[in-house]
Length: 190
Image (spheres, rainbow, N blue to C red):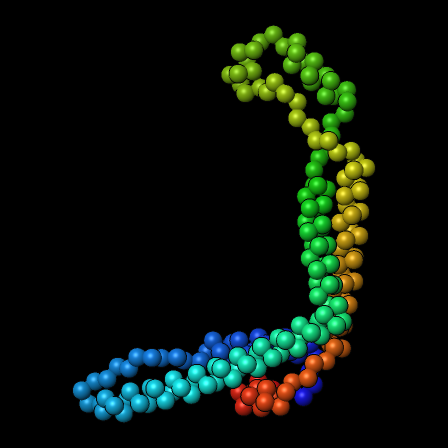
């Protein structure tokens, strides 16, 4: 059976959920009115059946994962995903820079520093928390515009890559083995 990478992803999630839901009870509560050996044998049989289901589903899961991995490499989805991750880092970093304030003007900085230098009342600074420094950023209006341009460009590139990945996930086909197909149909996952 042939399935798209997108369907393969859905199947992998469904398999994982099914495996999580399988009961692997290994203890038996027996009261005085039950046949102990019969109850132990029933629980052991259920455990063995569920263990076989789990093992079969796990085999199917990893067969699909290997096929998906090979297909991702073949059509370069893995490289595109790395590029998307890189762009996300760039967007995050440059968004932080773009949120800064514009640096104070040269005359404003010089005036504030002059005021600090010529201030006569040092006790007022220490009592009222006046600072003896001038704080300013290093960025001009143009710097902040450049940061925003980088962010916008990276967002467009990221969206283009994500569209390509989606298209490839729908178009790229992998083949399930007959045994995997049978397991998934028996579980109601196909």
